[in-house]
Figure 1 (cartoon, rainbow, N blue to C red):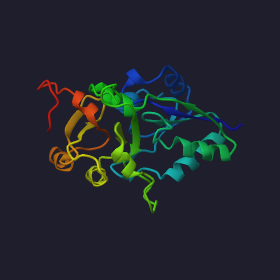
Figure 2: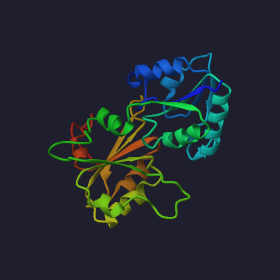
Figure 3: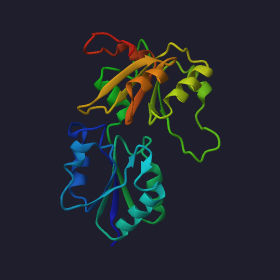
Figure 4: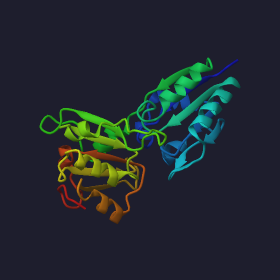
Length: 251
């Protein structure tokens, strides 16, 4: 009999924010397709009885193309049993879970989504940056910093985004960070707008780099910012407090 696929969000990192439902589904899995974003703390607890397949993307090098991942999900599900596609954060927020769900449905395979705590909110929270605040931001916009490279025209309205008075949270934007900053400034965002780049949220080597849109490209290059990271842009960044200095500070 055809099995079932679970699209599971593991949260932003670490076992503490892995939901009870996710733990239950992972522990009962026959096959687990995972990437690196859940982090070693979560990956080290995958059941020994499950077949584990690394389908992650490492520094732009893809272990497996997305179409091949979807095809493999179909193959494993048709072999029977419970198949888990384990992702960081939430499967439906820039996790390509929607694409995988569509493919599985086309093949008549049952799919269940297990939501995860999204890194777009949780990672800023863990360093004291609220993405909304009554005094600073009544709206928040989530944006991908890495669109489909086959697109001829960006689907992001940079003019609208630059004029937005709220918080901007960017996923997967480290590689294109200087370009993103330039686009926002070119479209009207103040160059002195505060920005924070939070690398490896909830992990032991977590790091925060603060700057302004005008100098984030130079600062990020100087300190060697690397993915995975969440980027927060807006006045809420002023609420970040550096542990050593006790106040928001440019790096």
